[in-house]
Image (cartoon, rainbow, N blue to C red; front, side, top):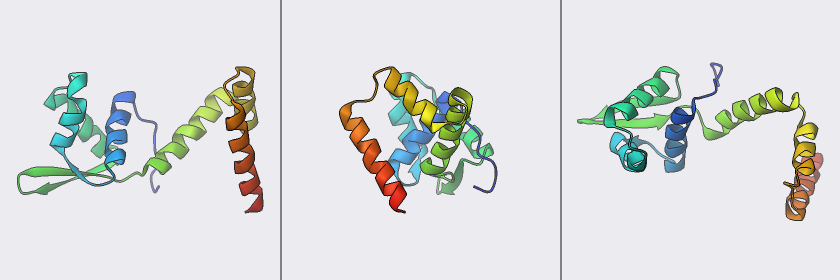
Length: 126
């Protein structure tokens, strides 16, 4: 991440999630197919793709008469930014406060707690 990655608006994030899900470069019509149910026009999709390109999230290359879009920022890189922002804004940067709020709201199942214990054990062994 050479440049500082910024949080994306919801609609642009939806485009990126689709691109990351594809796992490879895609043509523009890939987005048209996936966002048809939202009623997004071609120009709306093109505008969002152009914004993502300006922000450095994607590249666009011509292949004949088709535009091919590729992710520059990985999903993991973006998740680091989102997670950090979320923790900072809502939990004062504390994972402990975040987990405690989940526990207080009865959002953690016994299975979730077991998974967290295993993860902590793995992290300690590193």
